[in-house]
Length: 476
Image 1: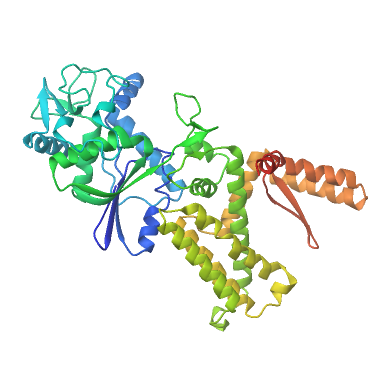
Image 2: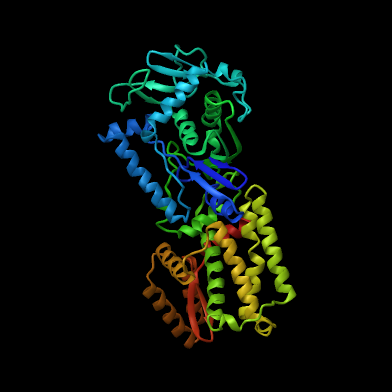
């Protein structure tokens, strides 16, 4: 969720590991636009599933939650996501939750039964305005057992009375714990107020979670409002939603065993956040290859620029380069203003990257007037957009080495083994055994190691393995 006045954006987002498509870049972009960002990311550390899992493990539910929250923070750091301004947990905000339930009761929008407190959806005529669902469309009992005590089957729990084997807190209605929905409303109100700008989460939260949040927040405070709802699409595998129940679930940490974090970040940003994103090894290989190309181009540019004193460079650049940079900025920023359309911004890098490579490696480029000034301006422009997207590494050379290490790991080879293959190939070429030379090149290409010959010798770089290249070709 985010709240903003004219000059300030505040945000709070409940974000499981793979529903971060819309949070990868929002904060940085809003700051670039000049907003002060107050980003609140709340953790649910008390709910039915956590309690059940903790009981299975014989562990305290709060301690179990805290361990996983810390793991989540590590994953977000790996992906270069900015930390939130504040990270509230349910267990630390019981007074705020209880106070909000009191407000809802006092306003006549909920009722108590045997220590439970239920929200009465009949008291909120606008229920369904976010999802577009009508009350009569909701069929009770499909996901949870119907509680016959409720006035309406769609009524939802604000407070649950204590049960054996569950943690509980004291309240005016007796010992118990909050329902799932009320916690988010209470914590957002505590840190952002009742009216704020952006509320985010996965599209599966639109109903009932966010619908219920709207109802209870408005019942507590009639002025409650959210300006924008940002719901990201699911990550799918072979067009099926990723889920533990289907057995096709894996974590960020598992992906990062084989792929660079910025390659995963680029992959996630390559699809508009509201759309489903289909995970595959081919997509990760393509993203990894693209990241390597971007960083290698900028590293080569940086290496040339270090040979020149910045003070000696002229202030002007050729009109063609100026136009290229302007078009690049215009396309990137226009796409981001269009509902954070990151795929367009990423695609817009192609032209300035190609221009840099022309200036670095072609005869015509090396002779171009104000070449060094052009390289400096182009490199800075791309770096600025990478910064906004959270894709700028601390060091291009370090990131390139890490990408090489990941490629070796996926190929199940060591650097020494690749060097040995290169030496074998050099010997075969010297002996004019071109069949063996080609076989070695193809053997390495098959596992994602591309050989590059130059007057200075043969080097290697990561590449999309041949089998994936064939899949890519057939798909196109």
